[in-house]
Image (cartoon, rainbow, N blue to C red; front, side, top):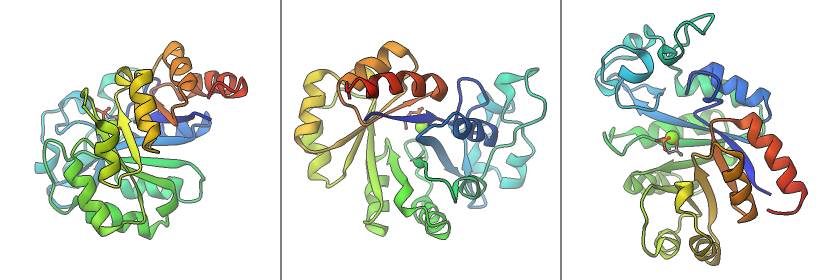
Length: 248
Ligand code: G3P
Ligand code: MG
């Protein structure tokens, strides 16, 4: 069964990484939500994709050099200007945890430590996961594999995934030898050969960013564990068919 994870929430139809996008992903029945976490100047965990506020908020600023209060003045629906009834602030990870605390869905927390390392971010994320008892419903991933290993040191009981946008040689062995259970490659790299290699190493495969029916069908047929995409409504419908047919 291939699962349906909403990439930055229901970001195909609502402003990415906002509470609105997360609520809408839940409404359409996503199995999971992927989101991106950064650390503010005053040590708060916020959900935003880029290192800067320029693209999504239309205001120039560096997330790591701004306080939470400064960031909260911004509207993260700049890309949807004129289409939203009200502003959508940059959410804190705490706000998100409150939303999903009682829900069965999986949260894929991507640590955005690939450009700025944000020292201490792993411990802060862990603290929140424990406070909200989300231990069994999270996958922690990052393009910065050191960051993933740092967090695993702190909490070996959580589930971890390594992100990759590259054509890595020996990816299955690499991930397996690090003792990490999930691999999160960009979907275009998932050839039948790579998929077979990853499966041979017993890895869970969650792939991004899958936005077309055709890609979802191909990946479901390969038996990929989860597709992470911007249209969880469409993915749900297509996967219901694919999973029903026993393709996955
Ligand atoms: O975690 C999957 C995907 O979100 C990784 O790429 O740039 O969309 O965060 P990006
Ligand atoms: Mg991401």
